[in-house]
Image 1: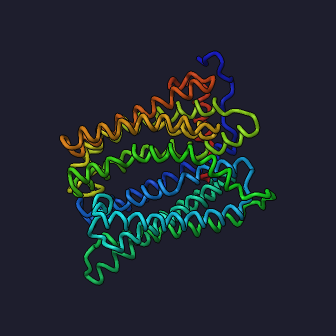
Image 2: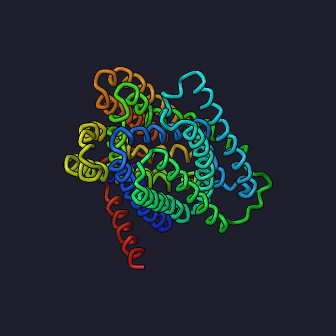
Image 3: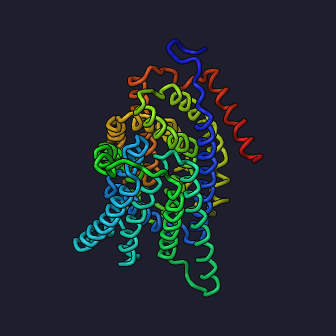
Length: 453
């Protein structure tokens, strides 16, 4: 039964359905590609050297997060609101990317001189590792900025194509790398995979750049960069704190349990985060749609609540299946050496499921111009992440990190649920209603039409 106060019609527009289906399909391809790439890396390098590679990737993402100031979220918001000159904005973003890369390199050199670099970057990578992280940060800044412009323009399909090209390029580069090593009898060094990763990011930038040739010419007198930074600062704090929720455990596990255990832990993390396929696809649509609606004086709360309900139940169903088949699938996909990742995966699942619909709610909060609420929720999660990891990892190793992460995600999600209920008229976030089945039917029908085309 529909609750009093809920609109009778909560179906999404056909354009949103089409974009959602395309984004979901793209995310599915990306998840499959990432799992394939991870399986190749795992089987080639083994747990310990994969752990070294995981530490490099995490550090590159950390510097990208903290140096990037969450500019992409501001770019999407300002472009979706129609307040940016795209050509001028791109020039400002280029300069920001160069500054981020140089700043990263300077900080890494400083850490090396005071003897702290080994805590965030494997010593075996040497100076090429420092350069690779700095270059990676700069390239990620360009890539995410270009993609944010496309999303702000509601060019979801073109942005999705760029995402797929990135993963495809990564697979091709890995294939070339492995072929070259087999022909030359070379050893699978971690640094080779590092540079393959850089090549994939470059391919994505080229794809986004090509897609932006179709962007409408803006008559805005300003680049909108000032508005981007004003919006991004609260978002930056939320994203920086959220990074701690997602990634801080990596450094605890590496410090107390070693690179080999880190390789297992990150494999479990990757597998569980595959459940974020659907919510991330919906959140990618929710943010710019809500931002555009808010600029026009309308609200998308009912549609957001509907998406939350659907995401919740789909995530629970998929998590049960993952838990049942993980003991067989993890060693089958990643190799027998990674069987130890299964207990960590099971501990991560509850928090991962709780956070699935919360991603949609976070997109709504950002879209209505209240990123500070996301920050508050992230701070609660971060406090738990730091405290519980410090308490549990020294005693229980990676299993303690998995439990800490699960609790942190659950608390973060609970805060976002509370904020959404208070900021909207929606109260039914978990019990399915009749309109949910109608929307699922619309998605299925539209997906069938797109498939036959």
